[in-house]
Amino acid sequence: MLFSTTHVPAVWAGRHLSCRAFRRRWASKLSMNRARDRFSILTNQAVSKQSVLDRVALRDKAPPGSPSPNASAILVSKDLSRWLDDTDFMSALLQQLHPNAGGSDQELSVLTAAVDGLCPRSPRGPPSSGLSILQGDAATILPGLWDREAPTASLRQLNEDARPALSVRLSPFLGDFRPVDVTLPLANTVFENARPFTLLASRWRAGGAGASSTGALTLVDAFEKETQRIAAATEQSIQSHADVSTPLFPLTPPRKIIAGLGNIVREVEAHGSMDGEENARPASEELETSMHDIIAKRSRRLPGIPVPNRTWALVVPPNSACLDFLVKFFGCMVSFKSEHEAADGFARNFSKVLADGGRLHRVLSGGGGWGAKRGLLSLDPETRYSSSGAQDLESFIASFGGEATADGLATPGSYVQFLVEPMPLLSPGSTNQAGGRLPSLVLGTTPAQIEGDEKAEPTPSSAWLAAGHFGALSSNGIFLSLESGAGSEAARGSRPHTTLTKVDVPNAYVWQGMSRWI
Image (tube, rainbow, N blue to C red; front, side):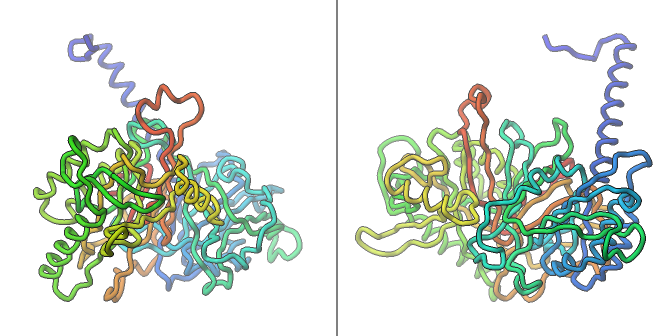
């Protein structure tokens, strides 16, 4: 019989309430600490450096006697990337962040990076400009910051495919045990600061040559990096788990892959049932019919509005626990009042799909054709991030040779379901008010740029402080890795050892914290 507090003595009940009150106080204190170790200044492009410094000065500061952080990770939207080259501004900013450093011999470790955008103030809003800052102990939040990478081409010589990136580890999804590692490619800043990409490690110290005033922080050393891991741990409680949302909804039911090679899906099962005899049909046949129908429906409903036709393939392994959900969800599509309602419903369950081995692949091309090429679909082969692209090429070649790879693409016996994004909202809605709370950590993708979209929703004219929030967006997608360590087979159960996927759906987010972001 389960223990219940319904008929326990009053003194026990009092202790139970006292324990709950203690947990609430502990959670509140932890939340305040997180609010102090991270914050973002969300702005528009017309904001001045001084207004940002003034806003930073007004943030909630740690009480006297608290440990003084010796490191900061500073992410800026690419439109403000030139600010990182202004040593006077950076010195003033660091003095605001580390007020005790000016009167001591403390050396500060700083990571600066330019990203495509910062978190919007509402899930469907435009990306924000500004700065997102994380503070803490250098060895803890920026492990390996001073590890000099093997000499390669200068970042000024890197091409678009060799894009530096940040990686962040989040807690497992709810019900899973594997941490979620997210890799976020950085922005191309060649038109902002003449660097193809901006990822810099630097040391700062009070005084020294070039200091404009006594106690001012001066730059001691700096060098470019190709990658950096950021440890942005959030609330450590049972409620604090990672979550992911991708604004997609299914266009077809899941179909068994009958024939495929590499990243090419040739044939899928013809009938709706996943039991019985396999009757193959060209992979693109059902997708083409469904796409024609939805494009015609959208054009009738919103004439003159550009209709998105991007499609993603969700590939799940055989016997995956999420197959039953995918079949039932598709069967309930008629009950949703709008595409956005369907996408929201699907997004709320997407973390479970990934935990059960699901992978997203953008459909690059296919359909039509004749003979042996009739109905082929080409899927994006990228599943993990590599600045050189060599790793994906090796996996791609291996898959053509029939070799099993950890991040193998669509293989016969797996199931594929095609997904589409909902129509853009004509009026995305008002952004969160200044009192709105963002999750403590958000990584995601920028909204799609659709032809005919004149202007994004205007951002506030003044700098807005998002206390307790750290994050960034990429226009090149984010890469998720769920990988179990050694000795975890018993906990893993029927779930795959490793799940690797690229998420390049516009307005997709991975987040962690007490505030929900969907």
